[in-house]
Length: 141
Figure 1: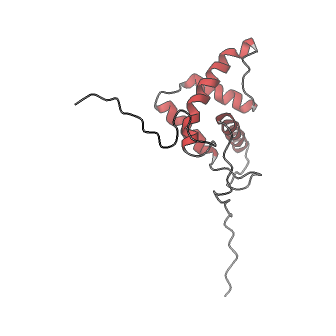
Figure 2 (figure 1 turned 135 degrees about the vertical axis):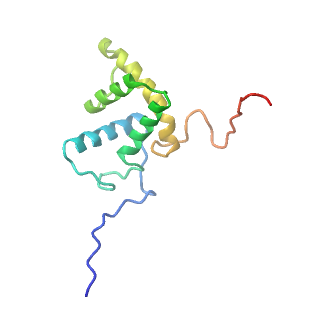
Figure 3 (figure 1 turned 180 degrees about the horizontal axis):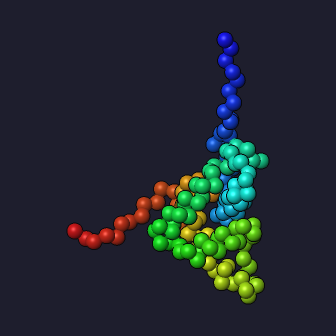
């Protein structure tokens, strides 16, 4: 009796995974994948042209956590969804998009830290250098 060849998908190595340059790129990639999934595409790890260090759901989980921590609200999530489906970001130069742009920028600035912390976006988290100790300013005993 011979063994059948393995039909499990071969996942790309995380060593070859290419992180995103910025939070906007990660979000637009995520929305493209979610729209494709909604339209019936069968998504799988390692099938794209570029190996990424995450799945689209990982980015959504970061956004969900920010929402649960009240760092963003439903208005931010709505703007991210609308413009993400368009695969574009609002322009501050277009008067009708100025409010959307403000919410987009706030959401991207808040999403940047968790994505960098997880290695989804390249570079160390902004605002902290590697090895920096942040003082705790709690109540004195």
